[in-house]
Length: 189
Image (spheres, rainbow, N blue to C red):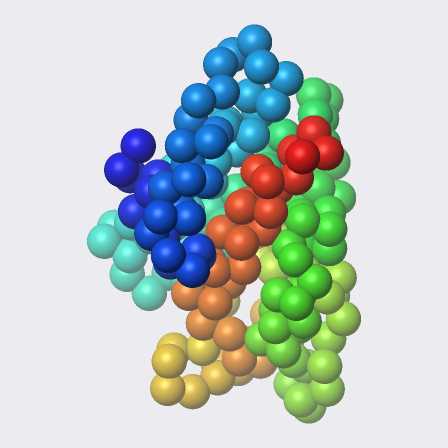
């Protein structure tokens, strides 16, 4: 359980609360109707950790990291909705950010990206442009063209035409917070 606790600690006021969160869902058996919440908790940690590990393999390829964060968002959204079909990836990615990410963090995500003339983007526009980057990686093999704020300055991207005021760590945080919300609200809990 320590790997899930350590992963979750930064997103709770205290370690004890993170431990209680993890323990509550770790106790769920396969026959419990809320068992998918436990799967969501595990999958979120696995997919985000994969995104974290990618710089060791391909440094400065944030599009690859973004791919795994969006895979996580889509997967968690589908599990939360009990979706058992195929496809609808973009719709579930949108749902993750528009419904599962808590509202106060949606506003922060919106402030993380702007048009090249500095006009704001709507949340859906941001999700769609991030999804387009994901598609460039998956379908075209282009994993070098998108960059987040580097911690010193915003990044001007040309495809898509957007200024990234958010860091990779910012987006990572939003994905994890949406995953925690999904786990907590699964099945109307």
